[in-house]
Image (cartoon, rainbow, N blue to C red; front, top):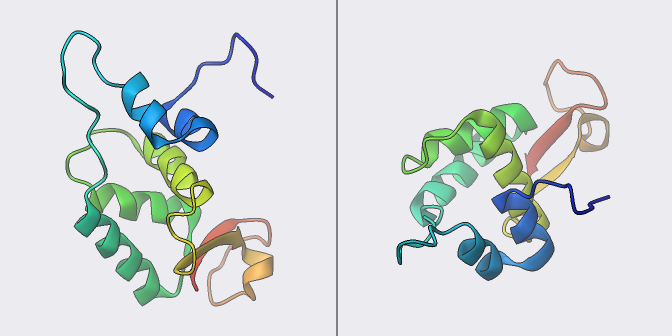
Length: 121
């Protein structure tokens, strides 16, 4: 659904074309600085926090990701988009699953059936 008017974010470029192109596209052209990467230990901490809870809403997961990635000073929307890109790129394969509450088997959250949730695999 993209055309020449679509504004691309880092997450959309990484999802469609790969991390290397996204890193190069969103680096500052006037300097040799590269885009910051997610902190590996922070991502492991994020995964462990989700596993401890068993199931979290997508919104809550974005907030958890924000808490574990101190280098990034962006809003929750940026973390929601980045989280989606990490799932699409297969970063959490075999560890976390993005699904709807109805498909998760309903493990204690008080949300609607269509709410996106993340469960530990």
